[in-house]
Length: 531
Image (cartoon, rainbow, N blue to C red; front, side):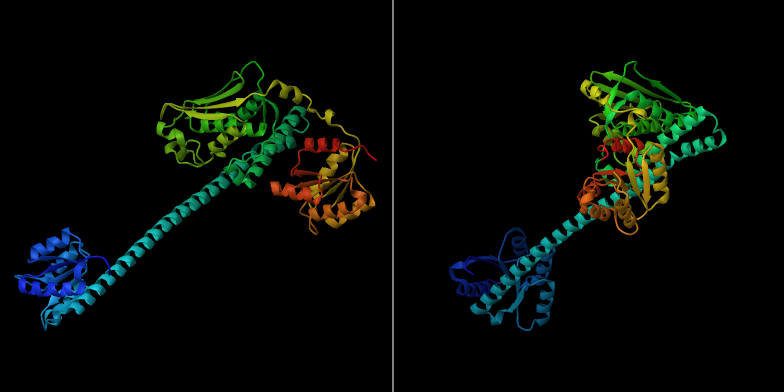
């Protein structure tokens, strides 16, 4: 110990003080910084108010005892090491002192410079060790508390994510059933009035439209993580906004009719064309109209207005329903957020949510805002979307739009799918178009069929019962005679990794089931001239 040793000596006997101080000087020499207090009260005050390295405390302090002072000091939070000085034969007092928090005890009749030095040195070492251990323990407790908090937050986040996933899947499953109702109705109509050409045409159009919606919803169900991150692949084309609006109104009108609500549509006289994904925009408008109807009482009104603002199309959905509280507007687009009573009452059948509306609109380069003057004053949702440029419209006119435009030369096509209904129905469809079509229902059969009667195109399923479509493609490509064969993966696996794997296996194209007949016809039309 090279630094000064600050010692507080509390003893009401001056002779004992002089004797003890002499021993302390012998022990520590010039390093000693001694303070003497001659009473219980001044000694306790010194311990509370000043800092010392150690305190030598006499047991007998007038009417009070050093043991009482020790207990009172420790109760006040004093941590200074305290060594109790007692008389001979006071063993019980010594034990009580140790239990009360004394660092050591010494008997006055045995005091010596060496004994005092050792007692103080050991007391200081133990005090430093206890302080270091306490600091380490505090640090560990702090880290444990921090880590516990992080784990609790992570657990809450996981629980919330799991809850949102379950909610999302449940809602999407509910929405998938919606297109089945008009499809079922149309099929029933065809059974009863198949000779009515108008009914037949309208029923087929309805089924085709609703089937497309069902396919897109199915895609969303299997790509829920992409939707939650806003990573949805848009299939852009030149579309007339009025057509999309009419589709959405057609879907929402039955709900409004059931609730005796007035659905008003205001369209501009001019054409407003967008380079957009028509099915996704129909989802946006349809969801806004459906929500407006659900949040509006019976015999209320829902108004959809479309107008042009320079190079932007503006769609406004306004209702006179329950409205939204001002402090909840900022949460209205949060996924599954419980925004007051409005969303609580609409928890069932929210579609795929206003979050998806916002994501889809922003993916199209647009914006959407919600407005309301408060509860009971209705709501207004305003969507702004950029219009298609004149150059894009000019180029888009070159896209085939009728079945006649898609007529192609007769091609030799092999369809490979272990689902016989899928293979045979597609084969029949292509045969009606005039193509020479054959089918195979396993990988081995496909390889044999190509070897016996080489086709120009193979529509190849990936999940075959014997070997995968990837392996079939690889084997075909290893045969030099098949290098110019067009291989098309026709599969339900549609992630980016699936497309990349198909490309690496030797496929030229990748189509998702159920394939759009127009897309398939367009692909067949791109085949090189028959050799």
